[in-house]
Image (cartoon, rainbow, N blue to C red):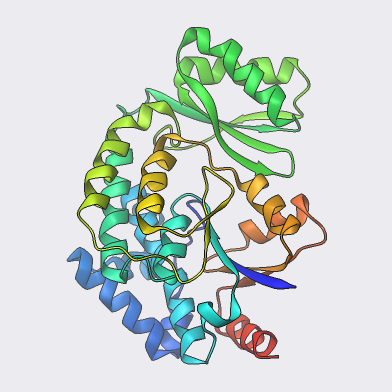
Length: 314
């Protein structure tokens, strides 16, 4: 029996997240203060007070979600829960991979905040507004969606961005081929094909300029091997070398988030419980749909932390 910590991605943000942590735990408040200092602005005010449309901006949502996750980690650490001692693996969904790596000691908190601000801005600026699109395909197998994308790619770039499990696959690319792929998916038996209200076509080849920006940023930041293996998004397999991780983080910008395979890997390698560290319960819900033998526990509030500390200290 072993435990993994997972870290949520974009879409889990909500105005007010992490406020109870900062109000109740000095360790959590210190995280938000350090992120504010690293970015040179009061991101914490946006996180706690909004407005929602400002928090949802990619350049804000990414470091904001990371800050909440690391606030939880610091409180757990202060209560004797060490990742090195209690956790077998870490993983994060897209930007959550940076949160996982900060928690596991690969990047400092300040550097992680700055990396995610660079990443968010670069992803937003990579494609002109309205030129890209994403769609959620519900109820088709991965290979069918891959074939749909291949057929629609005659009109331009479109590919699988996220394999989230539970019959949910997100596709991404230029607007016309994404729309064509969504229509084809419906014709081939998808329960639903939903165009997503996103600002850019994340995890697609169109993000190549953002990948270049992250290659440069990651080359110039201090990094250390994580204290436990990372199950990388684009490999769905463990990685322990800081340099290899940096290369995979660049690949991740244009590559597929293989979350279904990540959870399947956990199940095949003795992980019995996934603790979702930070805002929301998205990953906990996905894990339940992917592998019912793995229990999921969301840890994002003071009460959640109390329960996790009691369970992890057994």
